[in-house]
Each structure stands twice: as structure tokens, then as C-alpha cells.
Image (cartoon, rainbow, N blue to C red; front, side, top):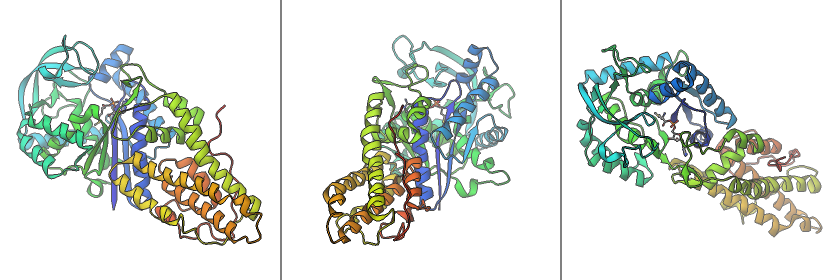
Length: 501
Ligand code: ME8
């Protein structure tokens, strides 16, 4: 069983921000979860380096596009380990192997009869790198996303015959209701397709910063076709000496935000059909992180720096906050205040303190050793069902609901401590109830931590280490497993989420 998940490849026209961290974190949660299931996981992220957005930014900075791409790609590459992203490869669209693959696939698309020469006339936004119809621009010829004035372009191009895929695309959305989620986005894509598709430029003549068109030296490929193909090309060279395409293609899940819905929901499946390639299993579209009601974006300048947050609170805290506070699939506002509240009340208190208290009680009453007692039947079913429930939710890319399910158990364990009051049980003659309560709490911590591991890899890892549990797979989330074994020593644990300086 394999699982292949991707993020968009990010533009190198500026530095990474929280929006990029968000998608990469979400993909990482999925990748880690599927690894826990023993699947052969491949997690891809990277940078999109051609096209006008990058060429223009380089010109503005007075440097060559390649230099700008090298510098900024490095910053995106460096973001991944900072947010604990476990990507298996980092693709750059300036990689020679990627460029050759783009040429190969798009030549096939032409040979298959889906490319013709024509003249494009219409609006174009260089920031979006997108051609826009008359009804897609705002009053005063403004780009609705970037609020800049657009120019009307006339350019001789090779076109991709997108309109001829209209029926096949409609059929795709009707036959495969889960191809694209959430449902509102699927409906949006379908109604765009039904409204009638226009052919789109496949190449650009005026640009030089791009993948050269093999059959016409005056053109480079339009950046979106170059970019989309990263998902496919990466497999052919990510692992030196090996071609992973046969085992991993098609991708299981492309994660994107709604800004690039049309490219992924319409152009991408049509392009794959034109190239005789299999379509991805699913595309999941998450919402925007908003700051004070506006989409956070480089061009609008209202960004929250993920590096600063991580420096103060650690990467788990950022991962947790973004997945917990913004329902995955919907837009949501983020703020420093909400972040600090969740950190203090949920991470530091509900999870961190629970772990410290339970381990401290074990040290105090049982000499730091795992008691030999069965799991309290009052709480066992809730622990038993957790892994399966979360797996089912993650299969549907319901990442926030998955974390909710985990947190219900965390809260249940906190209530259990209050109900059982082990400090009272310690005073009574019969010590069996205390053994049962402590064994149940340790087991609960273990189960919750294993299932939460994809969300909070660092903190759960420390806790599981303290419990002496080396297995991070979902097999370790079965409550009846004797983990840790009765009598096994349990190490002390420094605060998992300390108060920041
Ligand atoms: O569009 N909220 O690159 P890009 C949530 N190169 N997610 C956000 C976000 C926000 N405020 N801002 C950015 C491109 N993102 C193309 C993609 S793919 C073949 C080519 C995330 O640097 C989100 O995943 O503009 C969004 O789709 C992506 O960054 C856009 O990144």
C-alpha cells in the first residue's frame, strides 16, 4: 500500500510565510499518519521558479531570475525542517530532470493532437500568471486578487485545446464525487466547467524565463503547465537511480488552497487526460488563513512570520494551533491572542500538565514503575476506538476533526484524574484501585500520544520516550498492548510546553 501526498510548489518571488507553512504542515500530518499505518509514503513539496512572478521580482531586485530562485528556494527548503515537515523530496522546477520531463510530456500532448497555434487576446495578470476573461476582472480593469491594473495582451501562442475536454471533465466530476473536496469547491469547479471552457495558452512567446518549447525555440511553456507537472516529474528522479512513477503514480492527494482551484480542478485533469496519464485520487482544497479579515499574502504584506512563532513556542505549537483553530477546508482568522490562549490552555495545561502530573504520581506512589493492572473498563472503549476514528477522518482529510477526536480523549483523561483522585486512593488500604487508575492513565497517555504523533511529533515523541515506548506505529495505539510492560521504569519528564520567556 502506498500513499503519495503533495503540497503546491511555492513561488520563489518572495519569502515563505504562514500560509505556506500551513499547507505543508497539513500534508505532513497526513504523511506521518499514513506512515504510522505502515504504508509506503511519499510526501512532496518544493518551489515553482519560472514565469513572470519570478522574472518580474528578479528584475525589480536587479538580479538574474536564477539567483533569486536559488536564494528563495533555499528559504522554502529551510522552512520544512523548522516546521518538522518530513517531506521525502523537495522539487525545484529549475531542476534539469523536471524540465526534461515537462518537455517530454507536453510534446506527447502535442503529438496526441491537443495543441495548435493561435493568437491570444485578452487580460493577463502577471502576479497571478493567469489569463482572465472579461467577466473575471474588476471595475477599472483590476485584478480581483492583486488589485493591480491589468493590461490587454495580444500574443501568438501555442494553445492547449482545453475546451475539447469539457465533456470528459464533466463526466469526471459526476462519476467521482470525491475527486475534489470539500463539496462546495467541487461544485464551484463543476459549474466553471459547465459554463464553457476556453482553450488556454500552453506557451509564451514574450518570456524567456521558463522551460523551452522543444518544437519552437522562440517559446517557453506557460508556467502553470510547467508547475503542475512537478507532481508527476518528481517521481522520476527523487530517488537517485530509481523511478518511482510506476509504484506511486497517480498521487493520492493534492493539497491546495482555493486560490489555485481552477488550475488543479480543470487544467490539471485535462492535461493528464491529454497526456494519457492517470488522474490523482483526490484534490483537497483548504481555506485561507486570514489576518484581520484579509487573506494573508506576500503581495498584500499582511503576514505572520512562522519562524518567529517557532522560535518562541516550538514547531508543535504552530502545527497544533493552525490545525486546531482553523477548521481544515474553511477560511479562518489567526491571531497571536488566539494562539497564546490555545497554547496555555490546551497544550501546556490539558496535555502537558496531564503528562507531568501522571508521571509525577507514578514516581511518588509506585517508585516510577508501571503498575500491573488492567485498564479501567469505564474508559477503555474510548481509547480503543481512537485510532480507527482518526484514521477514518484523516482519510477524508478531516484534519481538524481528527485532532478534535484526540482532544476529547485528552479531556476525558483529565476528568478521570479528578474523578479518581489518585492522591486519595493512595491513602486507603487496598492499593488495587490506585494501580488501576495509574495504569489506565499511563495507557491513556500512550494511546493519545501515538495517535497525536502526526500532529505533535516532538512533544508526543518525548512523552513516549519517557514511557519507554519506541513504537510510533498505530499498533502502539491499541490500549490492551502491555506498553509499557508491568514493572517497566518510567522516566521523569520536563514540561512539554513550558511558559515562553
Ligand atoms: O500559487 N492561507 O504558489 P504560491 C492558506 N506556485 N494557504 C495559503 C495562504 C493563505 N493565506 N497563502 C498561501 C502558487 N497559501 C503556485 C502553485 S502548484 C502546481 C503551483 C498556500 O506561492 C496555499 O497552499 O502563491 C496556496 O494554494 C499556496 O500557498 C500558493 O502558493
